[in-house]
Image 1 (spheres, rainbow, N blue to C red):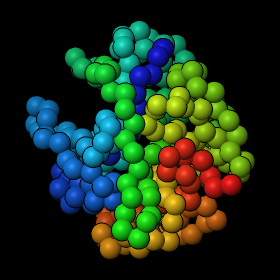
Image 2: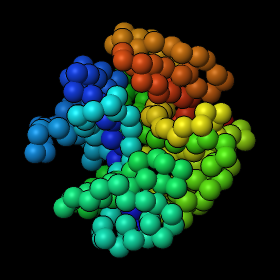
Image 3: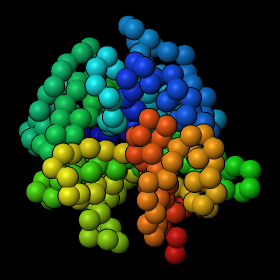
Length: 247
């Protein structure tokens, strides 16, 4: 299975959709594509250069969340591969198959339409450089090893141990726009959140607060934030171009 491109999908409720798209567009430094879909429920956050890897969806029920789209040459073959590894099919549509990982994380397999150019990080006033470049899957401890092995086998990107024992990340190809990080958590519910790489996290935090985000907690290499409706994400001190921690 060749994964040609990755997209992170932010799923918002009907009531929150407009305000949340405005917030995430602002912190990503992007524009918003024309709406698409039968009910105009989809859009892309368009970078100023490169192909989009952040997308938004208005959902009819629930609070939404975040999921991953895998863009592939052959959807049917890739879905078969995923189910052989333990994924389950949730729904099928002409252009998308929705699945769940063995641990219960939602992802979609979709056709690849030639996306290939990673967007460059944004340089903000004050010389801070940043980009939303990582999806973190928060996995209950009991499922962590199996979930890491599933994603490594599905993408064919081996996982590597992070600096702290609760983190592992997949070795993405150089042109892939998103990193995939897996975090072992104490919760019994699998979830996910987006991470932003920044050269100056303190300035980045202040910028996000200006758009209505709030600080949840500080750690050595990252700050946990909540967007205006309480959705959590992280501002991390990493190189926005390579994705690596500072040396």
